Image (cartoon, rainbow, N blue to C red; front, side):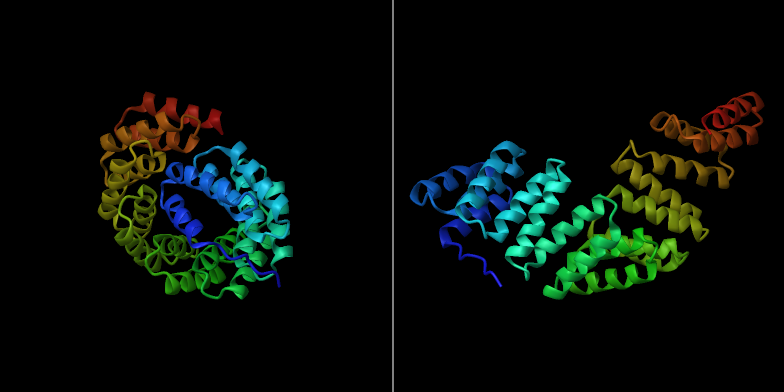
Length: 309
């Protein structure tokens, strides 16, 4: 198996600077490293990664190309270039680069995981799940690979298997809210709202600024008949993201359930402003108008809903 080349202490110092959010400051340091060692494939590749993080894909690809000219068996270089192609939207080239990295180093777990991510974007979920499995075989502590394989399995409708993968991800990295969130979605898909609610609670305890988490917890509360709790969660989501259609729409439905039809109309009107082509929002607002006795408004909404359908 090909081994990754040793990286100098100086390069790792620069990498830490670049990877901790300051790539612009790191680039002149990479420039100096390249002046001192013009044959350093790693310095070119890592500078390319810094350029990518600044959104400069042209410089990033140029540096990656140079790195691979200098060292054609540099597996990490192919992964860095592959991820640059992926961010630039060239998914087929990304797959080719990750595949080349695997050919150079068949034990490189991150290469399989990155290729899996692209397969997933291409809708090739079976292939993606297989690559995540290969990544896990090479690194059994790879929490993100379990989490992402779970997402692929969920896309394939295999929610029980997905739940098992999310459980492994939680065990390996209990501070990652996304694994709890994803497992909550899988439980909800199976109708196990109590378990979903527990996972959403855990995710929100770790990240209370994610509006989507509140929307999903609100949906679980609503399914369990906890309408007031659902309204609270949708309100939290709206506070975090006032333009979140689903939060306004769902809260409007909850207000209608409680007989608060004026409030339902307000939320559903906002939902319609955010998604004017959604017939469900017009239908729901029509129901609220009907309950308020405003038959002309209700009929107009029903007609609009039918036209959109």
